[in-house]
Image: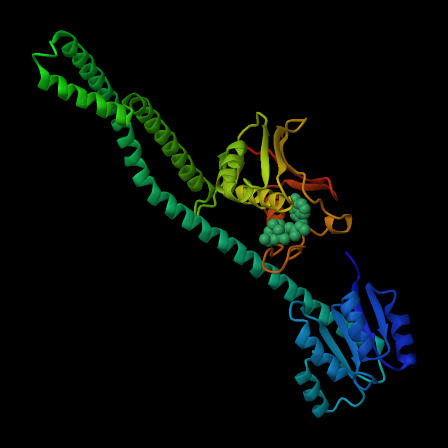
Length: 407
Ligand SMILES: Nc1ncnc2c1ncn2[C@@H]1O[C@H](COP(=O)(O)OP(=O)(O)OP(=O)(O)O)[C@@H](O)[C@H]1O
Ligand SMILES: [Mg+2]
């Protein structure tokens, strides 16, 4: 882990030197600033979790600095320790109002300062953990409600799908009979036409002509052929709807979080079906599914992992690209591997170690929360698996998920 960055702002060079000397070998990285304005600039430029600032300084004093930080740094909490010379109650109240968290009194006692910084770090860590936990909770609540919605819709669609399918089947049967009957009528008509004398049966011949004209107008041969095709196509469409409904049901069982035997290839397919709309215009999906044993796992959660990775892959592709999904048994047979590869933008080396961090996102505000990969990481870890990444800017990215086979 990187050392925690601390900004120490004091216009007194002796104090700065003392702090630097004494805090330097602890696990903090101290950045020294000569005044409030410089501290502000460093904070913006390098970031820091703790600020220790003198009260009276040229350019921008400690109080102004506190206020500015509280106004502008809303996403990340910065722990502020204010250095006062007297430690009087009025000062303390003013400092607290401006946003300070703690105080040290001059002359500085480095032991005390270090202890106060550590107590600040404890608070910040708790704050971070809390933020992370509540965001993850939000995310899983969101999944649960999407699941509930999906299952509800699937249930509602199931019923009409059932009777439309069954009606189409019956209609297909009727259609065959109608066609057979029509052919018989046509044959009989031909027979009548050839046996009757037109001069004796003018009226009958006229009606036959009307029938023949009408047949031409509507192009009866085409209709006979096409109606069968139409019914067959509709039946295929209904099969597809049934499959999607089944996938929706498989994808998200609200409230069901039990270990089950699952076929990972099926999980990938149902996930792909559910998010198809998000990817179909972005990428061609190539599947190389190997023969893999069923896995004792939390299938809905793994679906979420696949979904998060595949959606990221599609988002990394500018125009039509390719997503390749491979599954296979690991060489020793102790586990399976799922590899999801894209030929999108790739990830810069400096960001590769950060993509599993909660809230790390390079997407514009409102587009990404930066939780997708963190959630994926935690789910894979829960399965005692591992998730690794290979990426090259301009070439693409590949995620490999290794899951042990459990019995
Ligand atoms: N396949 C990929 N190609 C390129 N960059 C990727 C890929 N997958 C992840 N990333 C990078 O990792 C970051 C974090 O991904 P993550 O899924 O955690 O968050 P997000 O996609 O930004 O937001 P969301 O929470 O909505 O998923 C992304 O912002 C992106 O920069
Ligand atoms: Mg994402």
